[in-house]
Length: 250
Image 1 (spheres, rainbow, N blue to C red):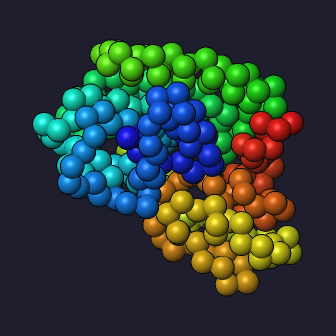
Image 2 (cartoon, rainbow, N blue to C red):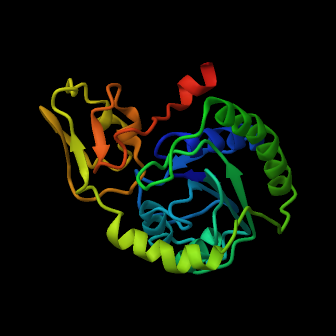
């Protein structure tokens, strides 16, 4: 079984690719934040890296699961998607999980984070290159998982400890919030794509979208808006948007 969390679609894309190769089933973490009862012998966790750590949805899922110290599971691995590097996200996961991973991998996917200066979506060429490499990397991951190898293939980047254990807590405290989202009413047509895109049901539509204070920080709503009517403060007004299906088909 492969359990996944995905906001803008990158991690779901990887999870589906991996599941197809391995012949595994997929189950979304967001729709069931606890995992109890009988478990498969091999468990995969696929999700994006947020601020060099793990999304709060993933933390809740693994913390409330029976994966911790379960004798039923012979092999547990994680595949983490990131736009650049992932710091010590695997160690953050292990802390929440309460056990060591048997294997961990990072997969570079198109960058979607746009809420700080210097951060923007990748160019079309960069997106295409990452998606081309994803096919190769996921096949390698599938081979390692099939052989139950204990391996870590991770792009930690520079200063991983500082990013994961100093910057990440500050980010989660001050920027993991939906209070900065705002809507340009002149552009919004109340199409509801933002609401439908939210993986945690954090948006209601009342002429314009309204956030309900349990945001996971995936930015799916921002990227899904066809008229760029949604912004995160003033940081995203001149930033790009990312659409996985459009990127694949272009």
